[in-house]
Length: 351
Image (cartoon, rainbow, N blue to C red):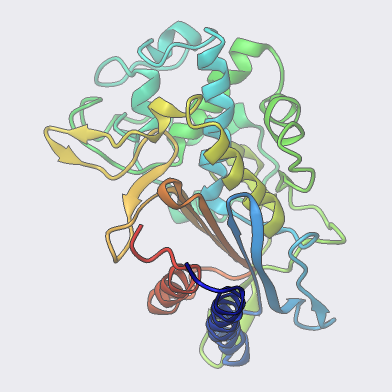
């Protein structure tokens, strides 16, 4: 049995190791800002529902030099909106208000029929056959409603018969949000606010309506020689699939909610297969593994002037959130090192 002195020495050794490891993460984040790869970035790590790391570097606006804040700065989270919306869909499924096996046309009978029937679960897992967004839609600057946004896709033929292939498309979640509106007879954003966001204490997660908000980070893109503000876009029409603004703290809260509600999300966190091939996707969630084979759920999101990463490791009770106010910086190696460092310094490497 170790003596009290050995226990104390072991504790300080572990704490010193963590401090060194976290210093490496600080260095990596600082370098991304210093090399003008990203204007501002925030990161938070939660282990067993406790925040064990929180840091932010850079600016939410390069001209004003306003600093990023993990609790307050609003970033475009792009497709990280999907798992949040999936949480809402899961609640309706658990209440018996929507059946995943149902036809889309039970809920939206006027939606044009394409190659074949489309099931709710096929929308959620991207096997419906809808195409992906084009640049025209990506740069939309009109204040379209969810119903108006469906005009981009509803009259087009599907790429394949539903259920026979996989094609990632945010339009699946546009359609699902219209289904939810029809079921509850309320706007999708009202439903999400009341049934998901506020109960989970995500008070700073709101629709991106191209408004001038005090705490919103200015969106940038990488150009030769530096960073440039992006053009104005209106993302409300694709709210469910990629239209939310949020903070690092709120997304971390959501990650912890996923861990606490695994029963509610059971069917949503199962990997989907098409013709025996793993899509590494569930229903609204990426369900995959990292470079070391560690299983995680969550999502990544790349939008105009925003890049987001939510990694939830159920086996380790770990949540890692990284948000920034620029489009994809193409620094996969850096983020991989950051995740590996978190596992190493929390002694979770073998989990």
